[in-house]
Structures are given as C-alpha cells and as structure tokens.
Length: 394
Image (tube, rainbow, N blue to C red; front, side, top):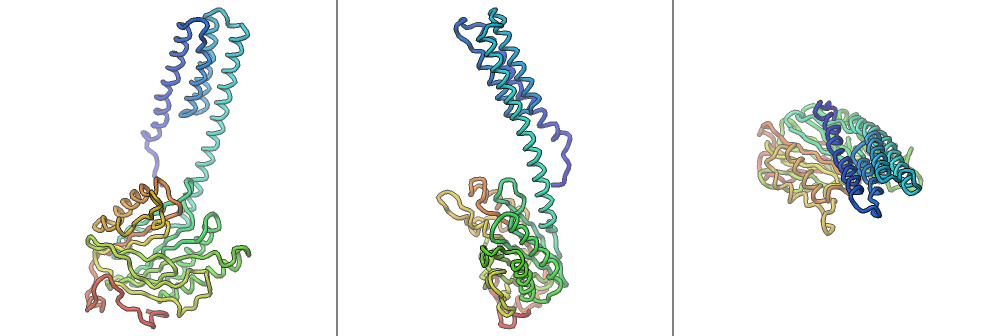
C-alpha cells in the first residue's frame, strides 16, 4: 500500500486518455465531412455533440473543453461553407452545441472533485486499517502467517472484522473476531477489542482468563456507548488461539466464533471446538470459558476465518464451501492459500461479498519436541483433552 508509483505507472493514465482522444477527433472529422457531402436538406451537424460526450468518459475537463470547442468550430464551419452561418437555424445549432459542451465540462469538473474527495477518504480508511489491523508478520516464532481482509463496502478498507497476533513467553497468541453490525460503531468496538487483546494477552496465563478480560472490556464499552434501543443486540464473536513453540498442539477458546479448519496433506477438517456465548451477550463467568486442545504438527496449517467467508452466497443462494475448496490447496504456503481462496471466493460471490470477510492462515514450519503427551497415544486432528481444570487454567 505504501509503495511508490514508478514513472511508467504515472505516465500510463496520461498516455491512455490521449490515445483515446483520437476517437472524438475522428468523429468530428467524419461528421463534418459527411455533412458537407450529403444533400443540403440533410443536417448531420447536431451529431457533433457526441464528441465532447465521449471525451468526458475518459478525460478531464480540459480535454473535454478542447474537444467541445473543436465541435463548435466544426458546426460553424459547416454553416459558413453553405453560406448560412448567420441564419437563425445555424446560430441556434452552434449555440446549443456550445451550451451542451459547457454542461459536459461542468460535470467533468464535479466528477473530478468527487474523485479527489474519494481518494482522500480511501487514504483515511487505509490509515485507519494500518492503525487498527496491524499487518501480521510473515513469521512468528516457528509459525508462518498470512492474513486477508475483504471489505463488503466498495470504498471501505475496514469494517467490524478483526484479527491480531502477539508473542508471549514460549508461544504465540492469535485472535480473530467479528463485531455484529457495520459502520463506525462496529469499527469503534473492533478497535476496543484489539487494544484490549494486545494489552491483556501478555498478562493472563490461561486463555479463559484472557477471554474473561476481553468480556469485561466489551461489557464496559457497551455499558457506556450502547444505545438503549440496541440493548442486548450488540456483541462480538471471537476465537482465541495459543500455539506453544515446543509442543505440537494448539489451545483454543471460542466465544461464539466459527471453528477453524485444519489442513494437512490433502485433507481439510473442521476443528470441533466447544464455544461459549459471544462477548457482550451476558456476564459470562470465568469458569464458563472452555479450552480445547488439538494436535498441530509441523507442516499443518490452521485456517481461521469470519462468517463473511462461509456465508458468502453464490449462484442460487449457495453458501461458499470453504472446507471443500481449501482442501485443494493444503500443500500451499499460507500466502498462496489465501490468494487462491480470495480469488475463488470473489468468483463465487460474483465479484463482491455481502459481508466483510477476514482470514488468517497459520502454518507450523519448524520441528517441535516429541516429548509432549500429545504425541503419545492420540490420533491427529482430534481433541486431545478438555478437562474441567482447563476451564480456568491450562
């Protein structure tokens, strides 16, 4: 996003508009020549208005004004050629063409101003995206990570979906979430949750404690800012994940969020988590948050996503089959995996989505120590343990 344009890229729009300028100029010549050759009772001069109209579709007000002036001169030349320049009919045609050309130029000016305003809005949205959704590093400890955000709004860069990752002692913690609703309220709540996660992820030893801290932050925010008419209707789904560096496992706590996919050697399966209610729905107690532990070995990839992905509708209203499609690219790198999913998802949705969508792909790239109990007597891609003690600590 922050890369500079090359000189060739800067020249391209200028060269493109000037190349297309041949079309309206050629039309002026053709219409003028034809009007001079057809019988006197046939008048083709009024067709000259098409030249500035076409120019406005690809050029700015200056080039449009130039073509409009040439069209007016061509209309005057036709009248002079037939010795009728100062007749009422020809004068009205010339004046009408001049007025229509001026109006076309005016709308070009308005369009150009709106494009500048839109560019400023995009710049602000891009800055907000960098502030709220910090780009995840490509490598975090023994993990390779890639992330993707697709906004449903055409000109938006960020909405209510969110993700973050941070290093802790001996591992990495990742969060992905989805704020109910859209607009500035959803962005504000997403910013609150991201800030709370970055602050609390280093303070709490267990995922249930982290989830409880996020629940408290969301509750305080809703107490202060939730409108009375929306009481109980605003909440956040979130998935918290902790990946130790040395153990071939991952720990997860789901707060009403869709379960991730585990991709391994041509196979894609849904990880069966046991979710608690979303953040902000009720005063969830610390003992209500659960931790599910799964095998996550070298070469495996975890795909985290928001419901904007699996609820994207295609032809006939069919939802996007993420598990089926992701199984085709299990051996790809996280970056390549998300590239394929992005292209396939947009194709499925006809080029646009009905809701924001966020994805994170995490692959374990380095070997882990085989001494952990996860390697002994437990098949892969299943819950290793989920004891009552893990509701409050690991």
